[in-house]
Length: 217
Image (cartoon, rainbow, N blue to C red; front, side):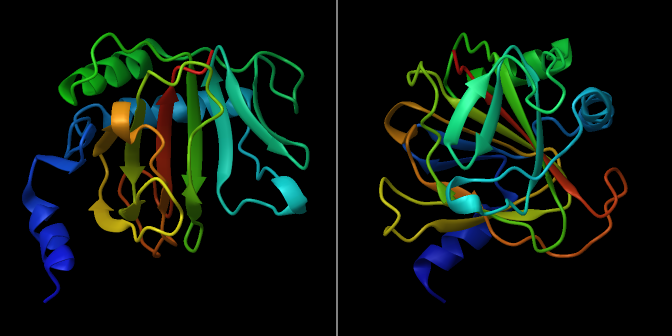
């Protein structure tokens, strides 16, 4: 068995796994809060509904997205940016629930990033076959702050690569309640999600939800 595959399979049972220097997977870190987190997602989506954004070239993302917090990430054929207003409603994005901010700050601290106070939370909804291609998070003003990614619902394969698209990414299984945080030397690591497999989760049904916390402004 290839050593890199063995290491990923062995990591299935580790509670705290270092994916790279300054990149940490915290297994089950928010499992207890998952029902409340999911309820808050549904509340936010009633104000700013999920939508499939376009990217440069007119490609439509397979992942449905919305936001909460002071800033929201948006995309269209002109490019990527943050905005205080939801372009579909013309109103501010839903406020970030206190639980969201608390979870993000606590998990960042557990991963070694103190005093993290996010002002943006991207909320992604994956259905079977939806994926997120390898990309860097680089639209934020303050690049010294980490990214904190929370998974709810169906399991997924997290792809964590290097500083270029050409580097082969590790494939890590992530489950509901898992959190990945990365920053510092790993802040611009290419990452993504492989095509989601079909399933039925007791909390989220046929979907996976992801909360990505950032200090954008």
